[in-house]
Image 1 (cartoon, one colour):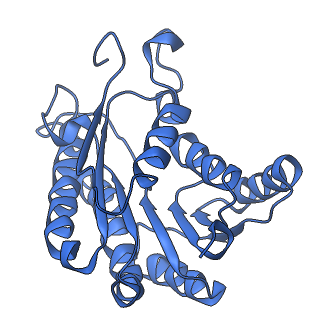
Image 2: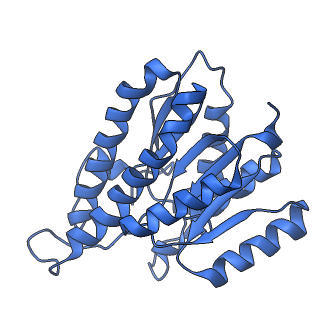
Image 3: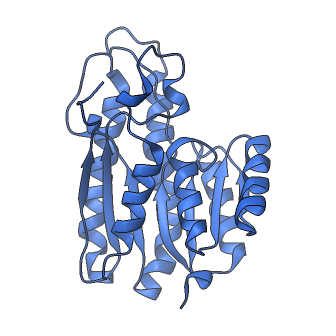
Length: 237
């Protein structure tokens, strides 16, 4: 199959890393399906992709922090009718704070958004990948998946869990020729850092993460990069 026959699914594709990944795969001729909670943001994305790449993009408004939202998005992807070649679990939220001081419900919100969204969407996509014996799953973990840090609180807990989920998938799916890669990135210049008094050059570019994902997918099917750790050149922020 050529690129135009293989669907790339990217959750949270309207901003930051997700947006950069959408544009990178569209530029390579792949049809893309993505989602976000805000329909206006999706409308802007559709227009941008159509104007800049003369290509349509499949979009769906859904809140993946809920099981119902994830199911609706999976049904939407299935209706497109193309085999999913790449799934990029990018949906996430960051709320700073310390475990012993953060507000009640913060852990649940980040587990629902950072872990369960990937869990439910992946489980919906996997059956077709197993049948085709083909596919690549990327999970946007974090350096917070490797080492907790002050004011990381429940975010680190959720990202540790996501990394464990990603490792489990790798072991389960290798026999079906499905590759699984964990992206463990440090600070990237995304809207979640808006308002922080840190020079922009201290952050990584979303486009660098997107290029890394695309290049990793492009390796031969005989090779999988299991973990990729990326940090700003001057270290974590």
